[in-house]
Image (cartoon, rainbow, N blue to C red; front, side, top):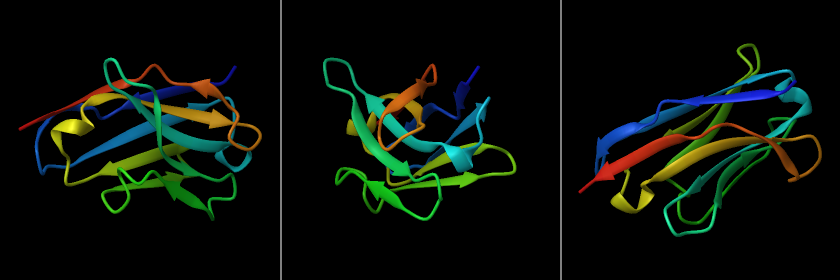
Length: 118
């Protein structure tokens, strides 16, 4: 059974930083493409960043490019999202997700709340 558990969310002031973690069990990161998503109230879920199974390719949404960085630690089977220069509009529930093939994300964590105050 594949499980994803996020942590690291919280309340931060605008301009601050947070690092989200996603511990994966039941699959190795070498066999799983990983992504970070967010969903704010009344808005659609948004893909923020993704890292390929190889770890060699990352992509970012324009809204977070240059501010957020996705990375992974294969030994810990953990994926991270380093967020800096946070803005109030970054407030949302953040989810990590895993895909066996391409961008078909079929494994999801429970989400972690990030709130950025102005």
